[in-house]
Amino acid sequence: MAPLSRELSGVVLPHEHFGSHLDAHGRTIDEDLEIENFKFAGEVLAEIWSELTIDNYPVIAEYFGTGSEKSVEAPSLEWYASHVRESQYFLQIVKCNDVACCGLLRSDLKNILPDGFFPAPFPMRRTPTGLTIPEPEEVCDEDTFPPFLLRNAINMKPKAATYPDPPPYDLYCPSINDQLTGRLCAECGLYFASKSNAARHKKENHGVRLSEKTRPSKIL
Image (cartoon, rainbow, N blue to C red; front, side, top):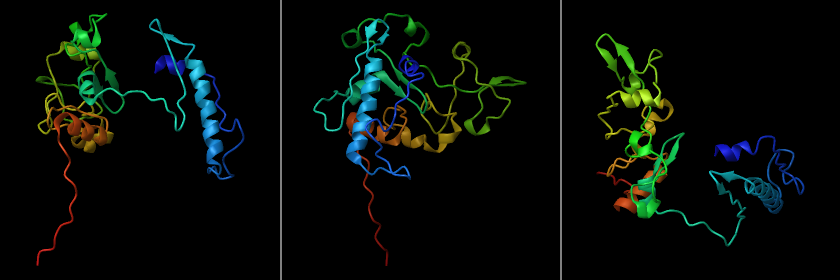
């Protein structure tokens, strides 16, 4: 997203190019006009981004409006599980080892990251007995999150009794600590950025259907 965002520096997209679709309180009063204004903004973005070249590949951007007959085929969830890792603020997409699927690697990434994905960040603490990794609920201001290469050079990994190995990427993100369990796949241990994504993965990849809520019966 960085090259795309950089091109938008200084760009102003007016919300009322064809006239205002809002009332004095900012509420939509003309949905057709709102769609037209939104379409104009989308076409401006597509025009700007279509002039880009990223990694020697031309960017082709096109606005798809409401009711458009055009569609983009989404990758299968099986492919997604092999090539993508989600977290709250980080999305990783990497090539797999199947040359027929992804072609040859152009870098030596796998020499540093054997599975291709960045491991989760974790804090470290120096104690009289040596370096330790505190539990998520025990992290304090004195603990530091070392850079990736340092973490990769130290033969230490965080362990959490209630989670699989490796633990969720967002294990040390306190704002979502109570949501981690619902974002995990109990079958393969993959972690997702939302419960809905985890549920789709379980259903499509493992045939696991979430039990429907049933109304309890009264006991007389």
